[in-house]
Length: 282
Length: 306
Image (tube, rainbow over all chains, first blue to last red):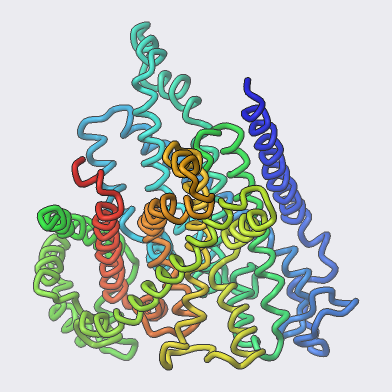
């Protein structure tokens, strides 16, 4: 192998591990925060202290306090649970829905495919956050409504991705062999086609999780997500708008928390793509 | 070309009909009595029944659907409680503000994203590349509304340079445009970097270099002709983000566009208005995609013969 190629391999090898490790470590840290939550928080996240309102960061309150004197660090820590579970739940449900629809459409083809693809293409014309807002307005402003809204906006693109991957795999010899030996549809799909589509799906899902955090916090910010006093990060940012002049520190912490979580999912997704699908990196 | 555009535009009505149908199903499944809601909290039972008959809500669903669709054909979007009538004129009033924001964001993306990508590619694996690539990763993780809040805190509150909200002339566009464009700039820079690196490896660049052109000149004269393609691709793929993101940014900056109106409609449960605006977004989305295909054919003549 020429020296230049080897050098390129080695260099990209280093980058892969960096991204993957960065994403995995960050995510692990957030999972710990989400699981331990209140036990790690120095204060009760909803305890008000009217003698310490809108305080800038001090040694007692490392990230300061909000308009009713609640400790922001504690709220950020406890809030991890909301953002993370909404992101993971919507990605999980979207994964199930997208895989089911996409593989049925791709595998069976014909009229089924035409109907499923038709509906998917229609839904894809609605910008995902607009779709999420419309659905949240119907489903109600709550963690459940938010999860439904994000899930619904993720299913169409995912189903399309799965469908095209399934169609690609149907042309492979091993599928023809499985058909020849008389395997049933379910077995061929579950044992032979979907495992081969898994990498593409997993990469897409981890990038979707980052998007879910962004959309979830945006809806929270707009008042359509988790309702106060729950310390969801986007909701906290929405509430801090009025205090932009008085207490700019309120704006900083939730935004950094959101960005780090998105960064974790994005790095994980990019890292996985570099490992499993080196051809697609630009 | 004209035939191509006409053919693409001809598909819009069909897609819109499909979306109208899906929205109709979603919003008809909202629990609660629509007529009672439109009539208001203080209405008597007789008044509620009058509204029900007037809006045709006493008819079977299928007839309501036919009435809804045939109304749309003549520009009647139904009864909006916010505007006490057809919301279409009010939406059209607000459309220019949203279009201005989207256009400004695309313009900024081109002006900043392409050069950033080219510089990163030209200085591949050196300091400028690392700085730009790091900014790309950062910008993709930052929520646009948070970026907007930071900009307001810094540019409006701290420095007093810009109005923090509303629309008072072109300066008001600065913060919403920056907030909205950040993600697009990052994506265009990343994709441009990839394309330029790819092109620099190709034979025509080696030929240009062999005949004595400097690296910079080869880049400017030959490679740069290819960088519009990734930009157009990103804008096509991110049309949904551009429109959806504008909703959030408009609310943050009180920019009087249709995104802001959508959120008002949601907060007062004016579902007629919600459906109308979603439909306008869908039409805008389809139009952007057709425009992208047309521009593709300009920047990449090979496609005209495909």
